[in-house]
Image (cartoon, rainbow over the protein chains, first blue to last red):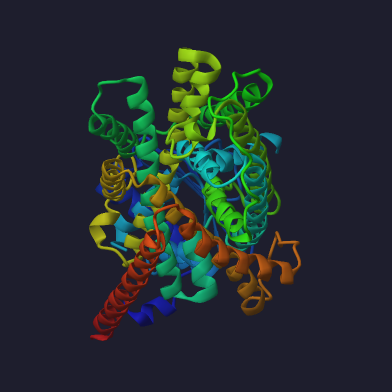
Length: 124
Length: 444
């Protein structure tokens, strides 16, 4: 992605929609999701936007806004722009996590699986 | 909320209470009477309590972040943070070496005739295999294991105090009062007993956990460990004489045998194994997680970030860390230098703790407007003093080992120099990669 493209990141909702499409059509990601069925709760800390992505049967089976309950939930928080960049492949999530710009509340395994999705999808 | 807090307390205490803690506690009897040892434990625990408040503040600023790497990078920049991280990883590997040595010695004692190399290899293979297969015990089981470990240690120590034991073969004459240096060195070594309490910081289940529960859990864990270690030290002194303690890598086995005969020997061997599993396993996973993070940043080669698509486990990082730890364990077993490794570990951790206090203080200046859901309540002047104290302890601990001369300090210096050099190489490497990537991006 060119530097110019990175400066114009689509809205978070659009990024998440594209992300869901990429996840559901990538064969290697399906392997990664096997036996892993969390609810990804995404929360923008600056404007309060909330989304959820429910993973089921090796794909994102349900996506929407709001804050549903789930036994196995992973909370992902950050500023809206950071989340948009992470879910569009414009920003290395590991780097954002290291810098404290991205917060991920889940087990080690959950965090690595999430990071692995970005590694498989975008090689970063 | 109570069960969440107890989970964090158990995690914090469980990561600190390792099998080698018994060894390091006994090693202090060579230079000090038990009352000074207990004082050193209380002082070390109190200092760790202060550090825990700084760590709590940093964790609240960067919830769920990979601890030391994030905090020190934010405060002091990338190079210093990397140097400290490499030093920290060296410490974790050495700790694994000491732990492997102690548990191998314990198991060899209850399984005479079994080759030590086979024992240590089996242990490491078990832990590495468990981690690479992504097998994780349920949280309730982990909590139960820690409670059993802490309660077991407390019970044995208390039993040793209240059971009328046979008088020791050699009546230990009271030792001369320690010098200030002796006491400082003992406190520095006692820091070893609390290493790992801070590994609870990435485990917060929600942002709210960092407002109170995570900082409180570290404090409670440290307080509990102070009580447990003090009672256990008193129990060791009451039942055993100095010749049975100084240089004994498995004083808990000796104590168990003195109290309960063969069942005590086997029981304390089981406690030792439990201590290893609760701390070593977590340390291995934590270190491999740090290695994985460094690889994802581009600091380490990409192959160290390889994960199993099925389990999501960073298998190459786990095998790498496990392999290094195993090699160090073999080296320590072969050379018998577990006490040298132990004091070096303590010295490194003192430097790290001092750096963390300073990081929190620096961020109060450079990021004054940042949200701090938890703030260290200790006066700033006291924090500066305690940070300086840790640096003094880091210098004293390596010099406390009888007959070792300046070797521990030399080892510490070599590790610190190596870490700084690695950090410089890593920074240069990532700078070159960034420059290359920028040039690629700019090409039409």
